[in-house]
Length: 254
Image (cartoon, rainbow, N blue to C red; front, side, top):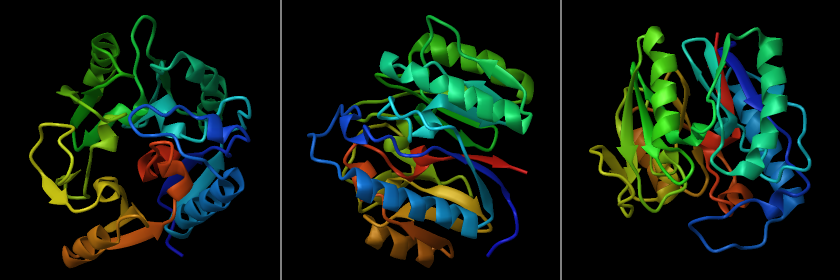
């Protein structure tokens, strides 16, 4: 087991998970009990690799609440509570705020009429890319830019098409290299193209370790060829709801 790297905010699976919002893919049945098992495996992987899981209080009436990333952006020790673009997800925020206050993080928030989903926010060094999606608008992006500027961050809006969130289309390796699916076309961005859609979703855990879905075995091999250590988790039931490894946790480094 790795030494401690920080805290990982996670949230239990709602019994209503199968009712979660689906936007760009065809709805297929979701096995909630299998999703719970997969979530437990995901959380255990984070714990094994130095991230202490902190469970946000359950939000059983909110089907998408397990996708905890969308409710908050943590940057340089400051937490920005979002204002999700899907109105039915805004009930998730109270529990997230309570968890952040328990951690003692300074809090800011996106205010109406702006909307912002955390899944649209990709931080690469001091640049913060923000997808202009169906969930995040120009006003939410402007507010985030104002909040992060004093922290030395530059916000860059990114046009997005056909994907739920920016991090559904592109993420970044530990060295800052952008990763995207070769079969995509969701975003105009240069970067390393990988052969599987799930391979475009990575979570750097530290010291060259990257969390990756089991649905991207060829990408895992390519990552290993680059000297990285893929940490594989099965999140198949969440992928049925356009979920990926990024959206099931919020990592807060020590």
